[in-house]
Image 1 (cartoon, helix red, strand yellow):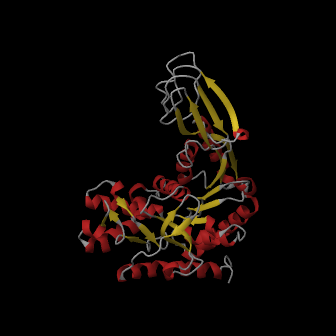
Image 2: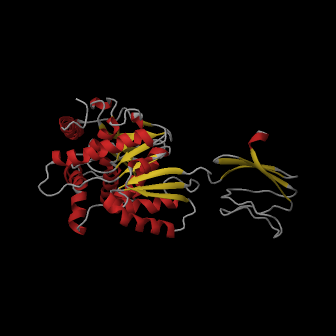
Image 3: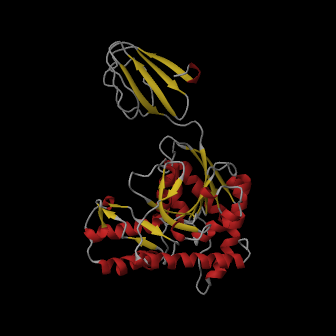
Length: 407
């Protein structure tokens, strides 16, 4: 360890036995100072101990004792908060997201956050109530709140943008009309992100139609690298996993390698052929292929409508949960052999038009994403993928016609 990187040196005299606790380091004697932090697997016996703390997000401490030397890694709270913007923050999905971000569930238990709550001007009084509730949670990781209708203030120096807010489709409204309204919103947000956000910003679009809204925002921010833009199909993935687990009579954790292809719409395709149940192909565990091709696909496609009819309101908590799952899957390495569903800018893989925002099977190394290559696609799957990709092409054509995308 370089001497210049040391932030403090403590001499702890005493026996030093039984030093293991998630809340801090303890010794056998009450008169010894405790080193606070989420210590893991820390053991020492006898003699004086020297604790060296290296500055940074992950510190390495060395315990020197007369009988042994123990090395261990100790994570401590990062001193630099990240800034996270949530649009539509006064809405149901935003409300379901905010408290979980503040608690550390999304970005980790050692990462402080400053949350930017962004919404339209008429929603600001409601937003103030949300701010009060967040304050009243007294979350140690929450280091600041910004509640605003200003895109400049809302996106200033942010590291993550969760674009949740969008106008929902009203009875009698044509898809093109909806795209025209939301397209203007996401054009403005894309421009503001490019102008005001931090250089490392990453963006997840949740507001529907999320694929094309993401495409519009991305094209409005050409200086933000395309590999920073994502749209959400994790809700479809989670719904599909649930249906497979119920049908097979297994725990949800038994389901892996479930990819959603295409658009976040009823045309999306939950790829059951390549999914696994306890490591086995789904079709070996659930042998009713007719059910998989019909009831399963239809149930997942219509799940949002079913929720709406049942509770009189759209999916909010489950959508927020899927957004959290998406961020965690993007920001953390994917489990070996598995993959998840994220909409990314197509690079032409699997013959899917380059440049559209499409859902693929995706792996992350914690820093960058890659589209999983070599996934087998049979005739049935290809027909479903073609249908959902054609819908994305139609939406792109509409957005281009409306002047929201370059011709």
